[in-house]
Image 1: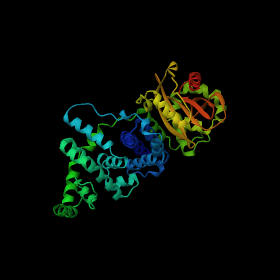
Image 2: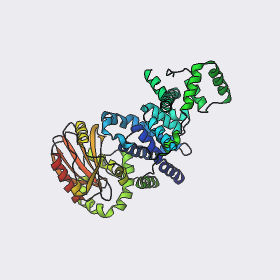
Image 3: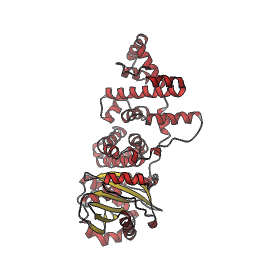
Image 4: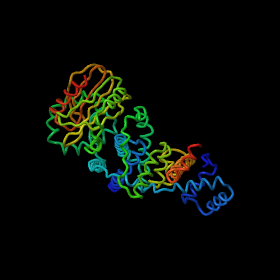
Amino acid sequence: MASANDAFTDGLVGLLPRLRRFALVLSQSEPVADDLVQAAVERALNRRHQWQEGSKLDAWVFTILHSIWRNEKRASAIRDGKGFFDPDQIASPHGDNERTILLAQVFEQVNSLPEAQREAMVLVYVEGYAYEEAASVLGIPSGTLMSRLARARSALARSVSERDDPKAQRVNQRR
Amino acid sequence: MNTDSHPQEALLLAYVDNQLDAEHIAEVEALIASDASAAELVEQFRSSALPYAEAFDQHLAEAPRELISQIEDKTANSSDQPAAETRVQPSIRRMRSMAAVLIVGIFLGIVCSTILNKTSQNAQTPTWLAQVASYHELYVRETVSGSAQVATPALAEKLSEVLGDEMTIPDLREHQLEFRRGQVLQVEGAPLVQLAYLPSSGMPVALCITRNNAGDKALHSGVSHNLNYASWAKDGLSYVIVGHIDAATLEDAARSAMQQLL
């Protein structure tokens, strides 16, 4: 029992930064993200008997957090209006070298995607989940996940070509 | 650039993501050779193979130490299930009472005398207020210290819409409580406006307002979940200020808030 608790505790504590980052991707608001993480931690603690040692704690807690967002917090966040949140809350890292600028652009472009696409992108390409695992966290079929990833990747490809080639931007605007 | 969905887009994406076995790789390469739109889509996917993990790793922040302590304490005491207040959901109640062990230890000096004085009032704590206290108990300084929302008329207007009544954001700086953020939560199916204030040191304080159409109630104090609170109700709205702060200061702040909210 003690070892299961230790593994659970260490795992949950270690997950907090990643949980908060995912909560921020979902809600795009620091106060909402903080509440979401607290609610997810609370529920994980209450249901820790449901977690089996040896299974992936991170996917389990990510699923809980996403479920709370989807079923409880998202509606009120939307109902209360996006204008309620400070749009500058997601700050870009400071710096002016080429790599830093690229990373900031990537971060902003992913966060500009529709919610369904950006949550899929982050689970697969940031958190490193296999397609099936990410689909399971989001509670959607794998095919739907792949479709969302493909949409997102195409949109990001267009952003890249617009950034690199102003002429391409004009062509795309006509479409 | 073709933006229509390709019937094999999933396969093509998995190819670019290096997620295919040899057999499927051969299948995709044959497709690319014979289907221009497939080749174009693969090119798109390749051009958007960006350093996503690195970009997002810039935004990993350390978790607040207090939240870590709470988790460790709760899991370490998982076999203990001391009796706790009624009216809160049983599973939540267990966790709260474990958290209380930690918090009582830290705030023993502040809280003890208040508990002794006011235990009798706990039984009368309304459900919504107990839920607010229960929720606030999880808050640590870092929960709100990162926020610095300004009490603008636009924010007040937004919160007024939620409550269906005109409201202002009380200025409690004379009680050393600085406004940090406003947000909307839900209690008993009704919106709850939560205004978080941060003292110069110590744990945050929250002023919460909900429309539950309870009758008017004069300012009264109590303890719920080991947190002091001061509450009142007027014109269908119920108010509470709750936090790890001495009862006298809390009541003074509540009186200021009452005057400003009129």
